[in-house]
Length: 147
Image (cartoon, rainbow, N blue to C red; front, side, top):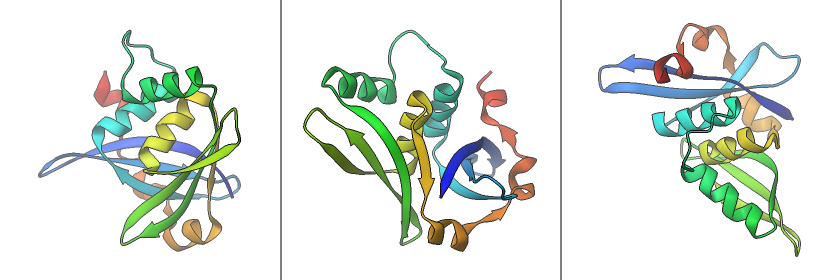
């Protein structure tokens, strides 16, 4: 199913900040929460906002190298859950053919945020792990913390 990055949020916990990216699908009030690192959350937010901080960060560098070699991020698919960890497939068009690369959802979403690539979630993954948006709506947007 087609998805979009609904939000990138953080919460203060006893052990520090915890970050979550929520993926929404059109016509549904529930989201797929994926807990990620704060650095990855910051990178996704920077990609969404098209923030240029001067020197390329890791996701910017990867994208620059991929494009220099003639590749293009086509889409991201959150395809499964393996022992409590989400799995994503990064679909890349190359000069030779399409390649599918196993990747962390956070890295894939950071690249999708920079390229406006399509984001998809397998139906079974969304249906089994969906949660009400209200559970995350009161968390701070990471942009507020970054400022």
